[in-house]
Length: 333
Image (cartoon, rainbow, N blue to C red; front, side, top):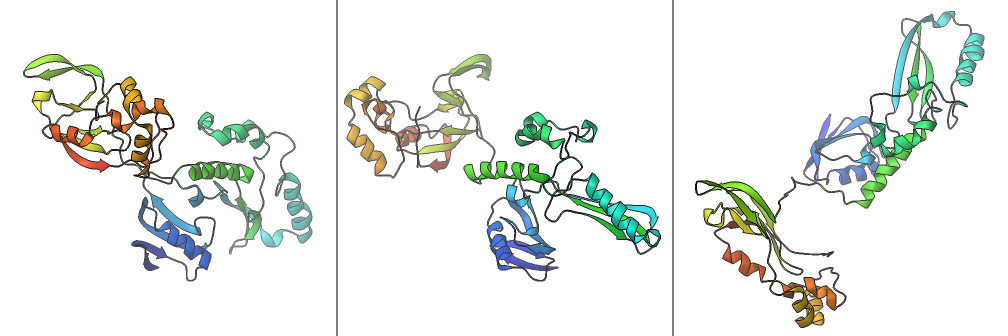
């Protein structure tokens, strides 16, 4: 085994030579932020589609369709018989055994003419949740017991003790490609990203809590719970910062903080008094993708809200700023 480092990631190789396409794929894989520990390449490694065939990688909480490939669940089987190869006449081997296999087992793109017994189908899976598999359950019963094409094979082999072995390398047929394509398209639609635990808080509610030695109902309308060490979100308005904060647990606020910047004017006042041109210019000067098109959209313009930085300064004894976020694109309902 040889170990190299690419993009600060260890690559462990059991392969002597690797083609240029495979190296390009290795380089790309070692930039993935969710790759765990190291990348491994087996002795048969060579260029694939997105990941070398013969490559092994581990991830934390992420599935990469191209690191599986489209021949999903490709099967290998081998069985030893009680037949001695030397006792099998050549004409029997050719005309009866091999011809019998070809007659009984559909090869390549061929299927069985009729559905096979359902007892041969996999069990114990929630196929209702498997989008592609669920669609293909009927046709799959005609593919059970078929070989597939490409590098899949049925091989008769001789053991060193003279006995006959049968080895089978079967494929997932087109079902594997359909599943692979489905999830590849999904992966292409969404950014290949990782996520930290979600911050999930609420405002506008009432809850039983204990404050100042009494069990009381705390009503929070446009406010959020901000207990000691509690992580919260305080958004600004279009064109201004938002903040991830940590609560300080101030008893004087009933362990609460603001839920945002807060409006500086009513919706009708904003439509009536704000300048459409100025509000658009405010956003576009920051290269923010926005949806302000007409006067009615001014209801949610930044000018309709208080200055978020002043709001944060005023609650410095309620929360501590952990992260400052700047908008790049905004969609309003």
